View (cartoon, rainbow, N blue to C red):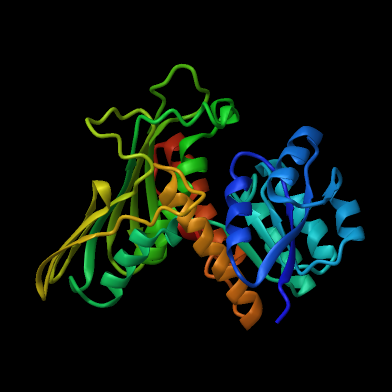
Length: 342
């Protein structure tokens, strides 16, 4: 079976991880690149040996024979690019955050549905192997029915040195990082009925919030706390690990620092090392995120080949995006948000 031919729009900071993963995965290859910065386009094109290079996405779509498009640009360009690709009736992956507003997110989902093409959001945190292992334990009944949980990401890592634009937006940690932890909460514990959030800004050099705490009431009866911080100085820096605590009717599960999972459940006490593999092109401490890029792109290939809807489809990600909107609304008003109103 011939490889699927893909194009990547956007050759910035994170896109290099996606290109490494595409190069490693059998069944698909990136045959064209697009970026408005000629120096960056040349640098990345040379690095990955991709000769077809464009400064204009419309020109690329008109000139190349493609099976899918991977959009790795910043948020303001997502809707026009997704709708452009949909008009060419090509399957599309879109980087997170999905959109500037939930209306834009729903419009992109509608455009791809009308065109009859798959849309996947590159929401990769749930694809990290430790998170997948936690999900398997829950689904296998290791601790019985969960009734309380915490999904936590607390760090003092300087994320701004590699992505300085993050310091300039009105919204920061919930939109950029909290969207991942909220998606993990949905993935592990199901949909959310209501959300309460509080935020603060500790770092005076940034514009948006760098600490957020969110209380989620899930439809199945479970209550979860989702918290994230880039202002927390710990003795051992956990970046970029997500820590998880779950209490169930028959036991507990804890995913702690250094990827150590402890399950105290119906089969007794078990401890596992869930350290992700270090891929040949990966670097610590980013390797858990880089591994998840490989996993989500493998999933995309499988879905295109099999005709299945991706787990992180545009339709699915609208529900995660709605939690982000609800968190900002709750933090602004001090009130709990009913998710049925978003």
